[in-house]
Image 1 (tube, one colour):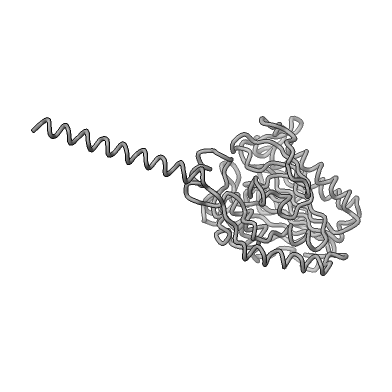
Image 2: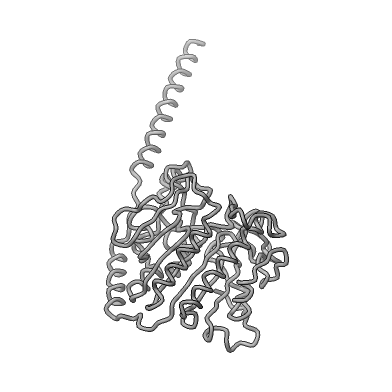
Length: 363
């Protein structure tokens, strides 16, 4: 009897081992055979729509658009929204002169989904982008592949940059993309003439700076890992200023999605220790300085009067920022995770006729 039991136990063990190996093979197959499939019918309709925009030549003397997006900036971090710990004089000035939205909501309480919603105008779940994209072949990315989740913004989604580019705008992005690192979802595949920055958050994988121009097949690595993140904000800003100066003669769309104040935090040496909020405060105050440089470039180029400037955050704060009076933080669907600062500035345009220059309206 004991021999029979031992024999049965060995047989069961062998069967379990075979099943385990088969399961591993299935997992490996699903990961290695992963392929994101785009909707060809919707893609064809998108192409037709963009061709109609291009044929209409809609740009003309249309206003420029500058969209500055911070990564994990809290609602309560800005002076205009009640913050007292950090100095943000430039954004506070824009809020006073323009429109300040007190009930603006990000499309999601985390990175990729929020950006997908921002650039497409659609709920992220509709484009299969309701999650955070991960660095290639990280264990988190393997889980996305295993689950058949999207690893990039689907080709059939129409982005703001694609629509404006088709309408005749010059377009550029300097900063963090986080919507895909392979064709057809890289920035220059999605309506941007020029890209300089990071594909992912600065804590994912081994960040490196890449550059690409529309019409070029390959992206070029500007700086391998480890990237000097202390100068990222300054370098994004300088490229944004250069773009404004080059493009002042015709309509342009500038997208400036900063890497910070996402962790790990970095600030250039001459700004370190100058705020009352530690390193986080130093970073936020440098970002405010960056906004000031962009505003100065618009004014110097003589295009401020025909430029809509938007300043916002992709979601609520993570570890160190302030949600103000709202419950929750990044990753939470409470107010603190999705209610974000949003300031619109257009001299002689939005907000000029409003006595209080603020609104409770949503984004």
